[in-house]
Length: 82
Image 1: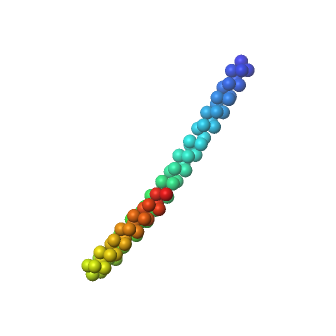
Image 2: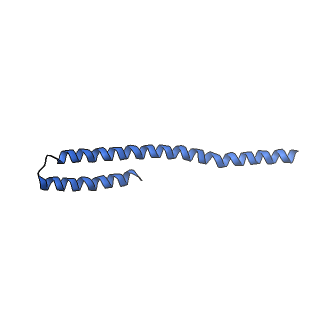
Image 3: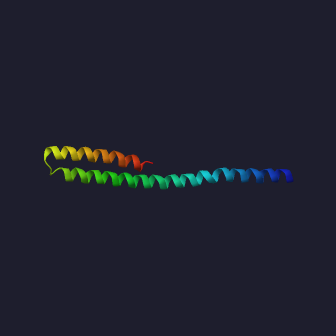
């Protein structure tokens, strides 16, 4: 009887030790995803603003500014997902 209770307690303790990090990891992952989502939203907004600002420029300058904005947008997204 004593041996059976000891095994059950040890099994329960082991199960809790295995389950606890998984629970904490999922909460951390949710927080990271929220931060990523906010960063991506900010990158997209900056890119939209750059596109609007470039619309009033002459053709050559507009093309140059749009290329710069695309490069910056790609870099911003790359940094956001790290």
